[in-house]
Image 1 (cartoon, rainbow, N blue to C red):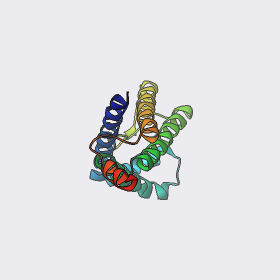
Image 2 (cartoon, rainbow, N blue to C red; image 1 turned 180 degrees about the vertical axis):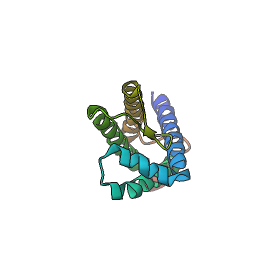
Image 3 (tube, one colour; image 1 turned 135 degrees about the horizontal axis):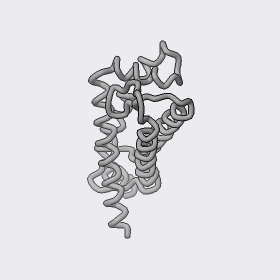
Image 4 (tube, rainbow, N blue to C red; image 1 turned 90 degrees about the vertical axis):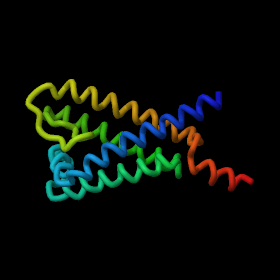
Length: 157
């Protein structure tokens, strides 16, 4: 059973690293678009949206690199879980207010003309799955091919 959990944790770590890395990279390529997307949510003052959009992009990239390396996995998974909860709350907020926007998760976002409700369900379900992967890593941070294993095994000797 430990063997399966270790490999499941490794898969969760790699998937989260890939998702966050891709999402962060897309945002870094268009920081202005990332700021516009944050502004569309109307959750932060307009003048702060650009800074928040850029910060999110670089936080996602940093989390992806740490997850990929398997360094500070439990702490990084906790921050990732917090980020996913924030994303879920933001999307639910937009949905509840009757707004039609692209979440901007893997693009520069924008206003939609129709079909947003279905998109919101998919976005929230996807982020819930990522939240589950992060929660798994919080409880089972030891994974294969992780720098944590080297650090933790050295400390325990």
